[in-house]
Image 1 (cartoon, rainbow, N blue to C red):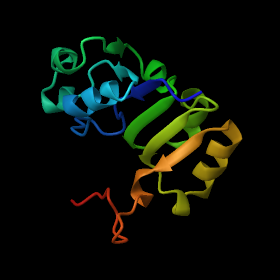
Image 2: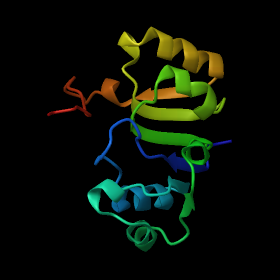
Image 3: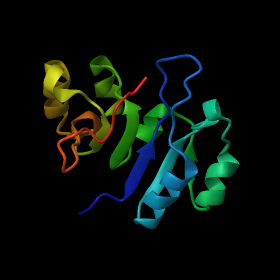
Length: 138
């Protein structure tokens, strides 16, 4: 069975975090057939509201907690949680899409395997030209 739900949790590590996914991305996921589940206040650091996301996806499901957003088939978040948080957040069989840095994080790789989760490491995605497609370009 192919994944049907997409969770978009907020990042919680830095106070005043401003990186989040925009309503057009959420709309594209819904058009692709996903039931999109947002953690409450996603986008608030950029001045976005739940109404902005609902304008893009009327049947959007907004959940109160981080754990509920992580309970979906596919979870996309820019910054990976700490390995110590995986047991509480990552559901066996789910797919985690994040900046996972798998080649340099053996504990993270081991824990994802133990949990039976699938991983897509954004920092490992390369274009046809061999260049990374996702970078932190401070």
